[in-house]
Length: 383
Image (cartoon, rainbow, N blue to C red; front, side, top):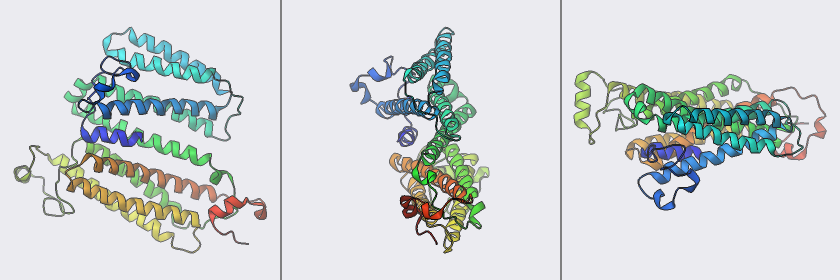
């Protein structure tokens, strides 16, 4: 939901509808009058802030739970550092006021998590470490989003700085989502119960991670394209200005800009960026298609086969949404759905890869003792 709301904010261009941070028009963000929400794009931007706060609070609770009782000491130290650091930032002047309030506020939430007394043990394996990683990423993501507001004038004046902020904020959000999905998988019954069935991966051993990396690369290109305002640099699809690959010499650019129905002047870089995004879609389609074809073998684990089939369906939906984004003139709801399905594609590929590698570990237990629930999930277990 946070990715969807953030996508709406970017698609509608209302990222600065609330010009101050972490306050909202001078109010505590939780006390902003409802009447103010109905002006401009305040509803979208303010909802994004509130939802991000909820997610951040849940991640702090998750960190405490995964780390067990022993995490309370670390959380207390971190809370102290953040509160003191926030107070110091407040003393540096008005430019640092927002970051100071943000850091001190987060420190207060972390302090509450440290004070809560649950005698739960730490999660097994590397899960506490993943919890701490999520803890750091969500704070960094919130700080980047806030600084984008605080430094708006500098970001607008320096297009490179604006692109860097947009890329990091967008890709960090996708990575954070995938990390949470991975944690959820590692806590699931599917991950912790052994069915005794081991898949024959074959070419899937390298196809699955390669296709997943390709999806992430495509998301990077998409984020760069959105923040370079190149989403409509080419207004026709599947052709590009009537051809397969448009020329970008000065004469061609002048002709393209004369043909445009809006008042936007496109550059060669914007056109080439969108073309590379389209080319990336072809590469991702080929790799996911290869994964789908590889699962047609009868020896492939049914669970992996179903996962890759879902992946292929999501990809087809994503291609349709990408096309519709151009055909509808980048309608906000269509463009946001395109971003959301992109996140699901990345998460799905990551989880399928994790499951395939997890199941590839040799099973040394008693096959007849495998839990019935796990057997039903994975399909029939050979005798």
